[in-house]
Image (cartoon, rainbow, N blue to C red; front, side):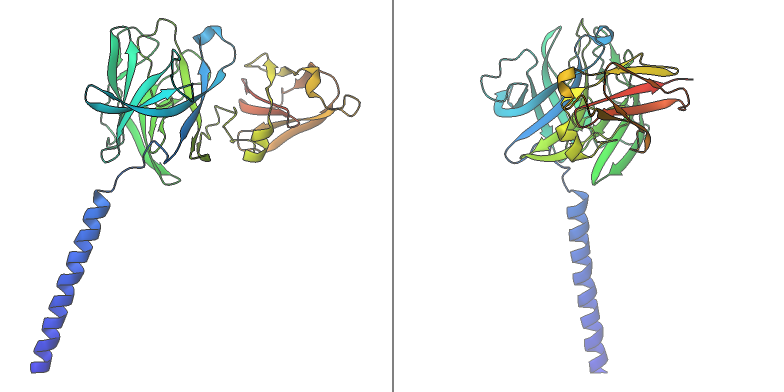
Amino acid sequence: MLLNLSNNKTTTIMKTIFTIIFLSVFSTFSHAQYQSLFGEESTSWDMSVWAIGIFQEFPGLIIYYAGNDTLIDGNTYTIISPDSTPPYDNTYTSYLREDPEQGKAWSFVRSGAGWEEFLIMDLSLEVGDTFAISDGHHLNQYFYPAVDSVYYHEGRKYVRLDFEYNPWNFPGEKLTFIEGVGTNIGVFYLPFQIIPVDYYTLCQNKDDTLSYVNNSPYFLGRCDVSAVGINERKKVEYRLDIFPNPTTGKITIDIPDDLIPDKSKGIIVKIMDVTGRKLLEEKVRHFPHEINGTSLPSGIYVVTVGDKAVGRFLKEE
């Protein structure tokens, strides 16, 4: 009988210890921080940029760097600028601060009313919640789109709003908050701009390591590997000219002659869908070169010229 009582006490003690450990672990997990936007030593974002909206045919590429910290109105911000070293005097310099526990980030940027702080990311939102944003295409106008999906991908939390940030240019993509990265339009907003500026995050590097790649089929730039591998992407030297784009059938592709290693041997041209599946391959010796895409179904396609040039086009019915 005494033995049974001892066993019961032991069982009770063990259950108590297990409960304490479980609650402690659960509490720690439930209060775990989101991934930081910044690396330990360095952080940069490769951005696809339309500098003047619909009047620019192709986007440019700008790399934004996380610089030194600075104190503004009692808050510590990290300087974000295309300039990697001080004095960060570029026109597009902004300031970013984050709260990893809440999954929130704020940008301090120059606007029509002077310098203002904007909440640019909130990972705590759930489906149906609304978020106030200022769209760079409109002066002093706010939108309050709702969250239409919350999901996880490759260990990151994504919160997507039912709002297409880029209504003027092809392509468009819904504004999305990305854990550890920022948003798919970058780590800052530029509101109240008379000339619209469209940004998309192509990739992020932390501590000299590629930490995020935008795999959207809408983009095939320097940091998008939706249809070419990372190694191949690093070798691409030129954004391919494709016209007409969109097209209902034939397209013409063109690259500078000096990108063709040996004109007598030609260079391989491939057309792939956004999954990387090859649909057409031919050897081309002279450019401009016409390709008949009439048989292709409507959709987005990628064209590569050897490892020298890459581009994409939209096929319409």
